[in-house]
Length: 330
Image (cartoon, rainbow, N blue to C red; front, side, top):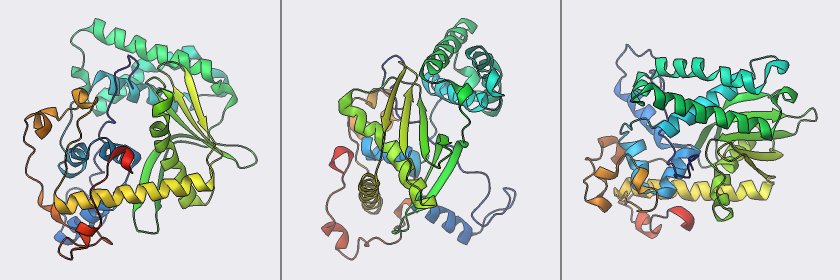
């Protein structure tokens, strides 16, 4: 949710670095085998954002992962990126300098850095007054952060930690953890900053799914069970904490595996059906959605290639596997 209560779809993930699966530089044209390997790797990996896309709407997942359609930047998403960048780099400073004033002083230089890397962000604001008001909202979120914890008393073990793990099925989990804290005794805490407001209790489980996803990946990759999952909502200054156990993460693993099988069934059948709901008004691809009279583009050829380890459509096993499951059916 955005700070104004507007629900937000998770933004598309950045494209992979300009290097193919064989490690060649971007100047060399990848051969067919390398392209096939890279496509297979994409087909066998899942992040919490893309898992959330499929649970929200299979067609949204298709547009972002299969078609890889571009999406225009939004002020809310850009503000989230900016606040995350400031909090990441705040911990570069000595502990005594991690103050609200220093954090707010990082807003302008971090925004300039983001615009340099993505010039299209510079077109978000029609007037300087709009940009100033937007930066003020980001500053308000930073002020709320300091009411939730004192960064002068913290020394994170990792920031923007890339975590990857391969499940027994061969599915690769991947994602970026905002912050990982490790206590002297070895207990770990996964921290995620949210620039929206804390969801109502009935939607809390979906918000925690992302955190359990990270916890599962860390557990499978390193063999350590995180002690605490902590969501920090800077839109209204609330914290949601959860202590997972092995049974929790095993259940999360089963849910992710079921979700992946649903994604592969959709890929093999070409049935990426829309799931209209309250988020549709904020979807960048609404004009292409059949639920609103649109027509999706033709599927790319690689989308028709079956994934590994799943029954083929020709075998008849696919139909027996049941319908595509989405959302809370999983």
